[in-house]
Amino acid sequence: MFEIVSKPIGRRAALAGLFGASAFVLSSCSGGSDDGGPSAEPVSEDAFKTAMDTDTTLTFWTWVPDIQKEVDLFTATYPKIKVDVVNAGQGLDQYTALRTALRAGTGAPDVVQIEYQYLSSFILGDNLLDLSGSNGYDQLSAQYPDWVNAQITRDGKIYGVPQDIGPMGMLYREDLLTAAGVQAPTTWAEFATAAETYRAANPSSYLTDLPPNQAGQMIGFMWANGAKPFTYDGAETVGIDFSSAEATEVIEFWQDLAQRDLVAVDPDFTDQWYQGLSQGTYASWLTAAWGPVFLQGTAENTSGSWRAAQLPQFTAGGTATGNWGGSTDAVIASSPNPIAAAELARWINVEEQPATLFATEQFLFPPSRTVQEAPEFIDAAPEFYGGQEVNKLFTEAAANVDTEFEWLPFMDYVYSSYEDVMGPAITGRGDMKGALATWEAQLKTYAQEQGFTVQ
Image (cartoon, rainbow, N blue to C red; front, side, top):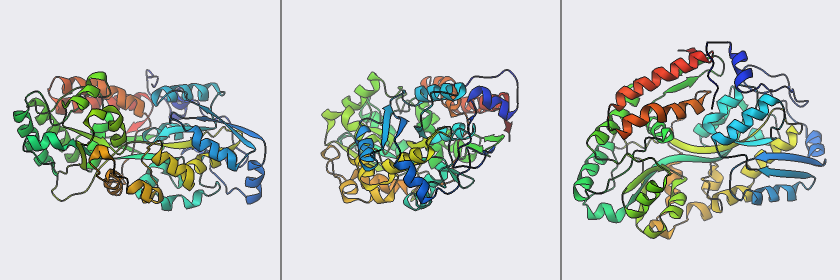
């Protein structure tokens, strides 16, 4: 969580307190800039070979289960490199620990897992190494959809290697919908009608749940509808706008369903929510590409009943979707071993064997088109989904995510304040549109207090 300052201060001064600017300029890089970490110069072949053939220990912070498998493949390829894998907490817990280490100037890892929406906050502090001059990074962009490349780059600099992504879609109980006389909706208008029909047929159940604690889902809905609630120039100026026609259309849609008691409003990832998925309290889950595997472990007793579909559209025939979740592996600019650290981040996510392991054993949805199109991934037909090729459906969704979507450099506060401001309006089935305006105003005030100019 950010530390709120009492009055506007300069961006650099604010950063020193909030993040702790990197104190090192790497020998393989030129000087830093206000737009991110040190700018990479091409690493020579000799320098790369020397670095990878020198006894070195790297520290890697990540919360991915069983990632030691991929790391072991890396160290088998580069036997002089040792990697200490550390779980410093998941998501915000890790980021808090990372900022503490950066502020102290000691204890930071060489490589760290960072979700896409949090990259900006660490780029801003000159804390991440620009990877564009590192070995093999000039070939990365061709592997990913344009929107993924846009998430990891700023001003031509690369600040993270994509590890997984979360294009959105819909998982639904085919048996429950059929029994209620409902078909899987392709538009939001159809979804609203289906919610009404389903609720009438099943008074103790809902077509879906709108969790009051889940900013990621709501932002994903807005992303899918072409809204641009956040802008950031990489320096001192941010834009915050939830009043656009696209954002308004999304919030009015969900407000209508909530106020008519046509959707549940239960917090997600709680015991009650898990039970709801298993017991048929929710007949669908509007989720991301990581959802199908997660659901299999959560609602095993419903195996064979679920199917997947593309996210409904406000415009009939549309194909747009948003992204919810996914991570990168980034290199901390103060790493004393930048070449080896950059190779670790690249190798485990790009080389065929480890990248395929991530997709088929840890079940991370791959950002790489190469892995997406591998037969063992795209042709998988799990029994849980009645033999449907669910990966193929989400691969199609991955190609339809809007490229022009940005994040603020203080998304920790964005998410926590969503739960505080939007949460009660959702739970109370009240004025969500009014709460959205309040949330916007609160974010603008916070940005100004941190020394940013708000457009």
